[in-house]
Figure (tube, rainbow, N blue to C red):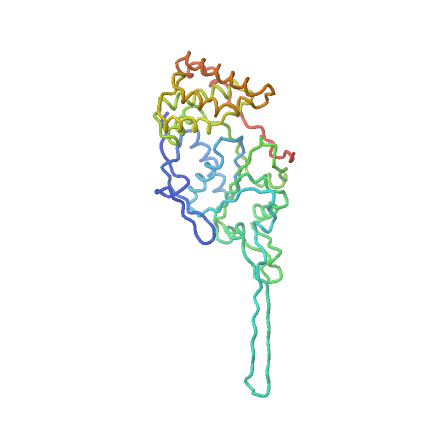
Length: 347
């Protein structure tokens, strides 16, 4: 399998451009890697978005949800507005609020003996990001949306079903409802395996979007991404990815370490040089430092046991001459699907 660069987060110069309304102009990026697995999920998401539905990428950490959301949004050819879920968000942080006061005064002294005064005052309304996107037809990328309180996300209920945004602050001006632009689209991401700092998502909101469950990519895709993100050669990238995938298979959590660990180790090798083997001390301590947190997950016997586990994997790695042979069996296992726990409560 060969992977090629594809359109994604930024224009060709890799510098995203923003406008006064807070939107980002998305375009091609030489840093993005596409493979058959990435292409398939992209095509599915685009099919749903073009049909007018919101798309929800759900998966554990390190599966590329946010990057994929940017990539899909770039294919729509519209400016995008990025939101990050936050427990302090309220509806006004998304749709807007009154900010400031405008006062005008007219003095009519046309007849010298008569003075007529007219004063008018009104609060100033400032649109926030969702209202701006609905008016102008931008795409919304709402990253980790379940980190916001459910009531803060209520405006999306009418947006995604009736195509209308209810803006209570504008009712007195005859503008209480904003018709959603026909080209408005919404892309959500969430981590169903997360348990801290997240809220239960309303069933009504989940019912208005199409959820695509993401898992870790296949070996070839992970290798291609590691090469692209780190700049090392493919041979070393293969060995790094194989070791990380072995740690993921043999470790206590099937979701960790993630692809980010492969990229981190590869970047250290790119910066300091050397081969990806136990004969390179830089590779050894990079693996210990980067992979130890994953080995510690769910363990209560301390760092010594996790270090011993990493040492065991490294010895197995060198004995196998690279882990591709040792992990052949694990690659034949059925793809693990993220358990949909987006309705899990905050703990």
